[in-house]
Length: 114
Image 1: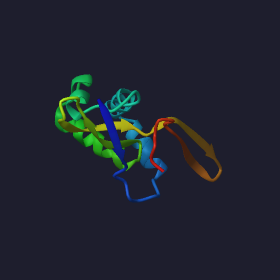
Image 2: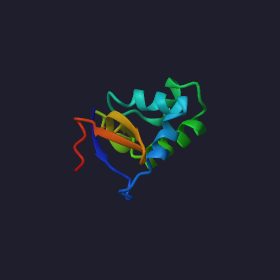
Image 3: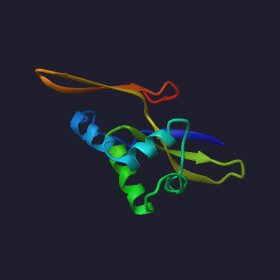
């Protein structure tokens, strides 16, 4: 099994508040944890959560928009392929000061996107 990752996000500026909002949801956090060790399909993620498939797809979209998740194609040994999702961050740091809240993301070391 192999995967090719392609970032589907085109807007370089991500709102830190939106990232924190996404992480406030238990289903989204479960998806992020599940995808931190490699790509998972929406079906696999639905099985890992206590959420409906519609909810999982909404959370996937939120994570994609917040650049916490990337879409990729997973190729199976039989030649078939499917869309999968992989966490793009390894570490998230939240800094709070007089200027506001800043979210600093550390990219996954296996993340080959430049």
